Image (tube, rainbow, N blue to C red; front, side, top):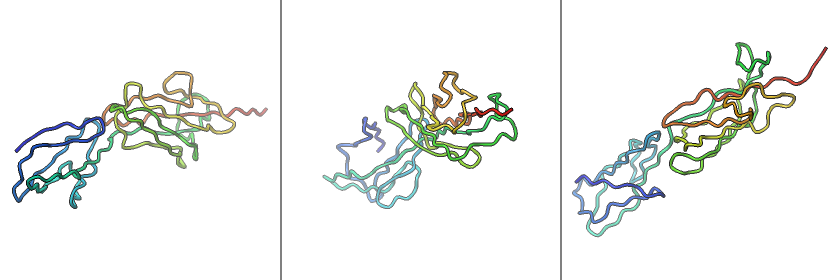
Length: 190
């Protein structure tokens, strides 16, 4: 028996009017949409994460509603927040990262779901958001929420005049490693 169905807006699916299975049972397989992967097949101890749940024995007049699948995105966004010592808007060798800054991600995925995240820059200024589904056409908004004290932005990734914020579209499985934020000092001496 080979039957196909599609999930509804909430992710629910049903196969109805099924015949009882044999002793080997049915296998339910999920086909993940582009940019997503199966990470959980939850039914009767199935510990594989391959998008298939075998051995579902179905008796006459039985309803089994616990064959669930978990999906996650395969995309990522991130890179580095750095101190632009020569004030040229370019990451040069030797320019240090800025640690301890909060970076947020917000937007809507291509399925219409809200996506949010918060992380902090590491000792080298690196940050990343992983396991992201593809964005909708608007893209994800990445924000350095509190820029370093005594600095001004020196680099604006998307050229919109909001250098603490970058709006980046994300296609299925895309890994954006170019979402950088540069800051130069504002003090003077001389």
